[in-house]
Image (cartoon, each protein chain N blue to C red):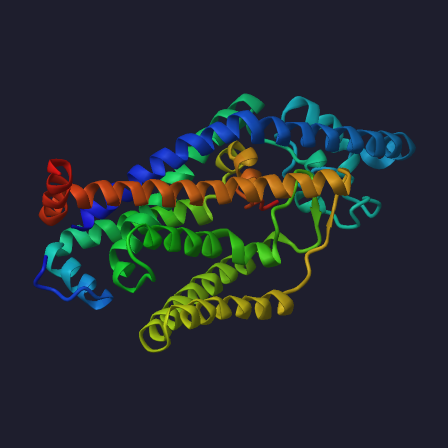
Length: 300
Length: 62
């Protein structure tokens, strides 16, 4: 039975993965590349200026960075962003890794980046489908609010809140080249912690809904089920602020963030819709009463 | 299938009956390997290859 659930979840992931892979190829890839190029251009303007004025000691004391294995065009920029001595514009010797993509070296070609990103988009949805709509749904199905397709959509909402929604309250999707004030070593546990908080909130919401549904009716259950999500505001307020800066205009940054949010909403919506369809078709195949009802209806 | 109660606890019990210890161990190992790869494999080749995807998924970590 678990295998059956897992198969259904992976199938839903496959459908969502094909669409998100296309989204990656047609929308996200060109947009991220464009944003990166803008950051490169901005960095070259700044860097070139600085390079001229400080070339004398820029060379010679670089090298304690592990930044050099990048592709050719990055190496030129490395000269200005790397001067490991006391004069770097980042104000810290190894600070470039947290800086913008304009200074970001890459170990792979753009073609590989694009191809792997498209494939990753597909596998991402399959992973979410298998984990949430396969394994988690198998164990939690009796406790998930609603009946029929509503259970799939409730799981989709819970999945989105857990994986993306709750962490984004603290760390919203960053546009390419954005310089973030919090270091990676802080952001990773912060993101993971908010994922845990999101999952616990969803479980609490489901529990409250079921309790109130049995005693106070559907209206009270819906209100009671929504309230726990307000608790996510507490860690969001207490978490350290992550200031974002970059060469892109604020409007473009906002637009890209919105697009990336939309992409993830799309993934979860497709997962839930496909999963609901698969469950529906499966139950009509295996439920003899449903089959006989169908036969009666068609006979009528 | 109908012998266990339709509760979360029932599902856990059902999985324990249906799956052999070897299958459970294999499943846990697979999840651990997947999690390890996703979380800790910060190798530049893998990390940079997924650069565009990480932005699109809202999980930028640079």
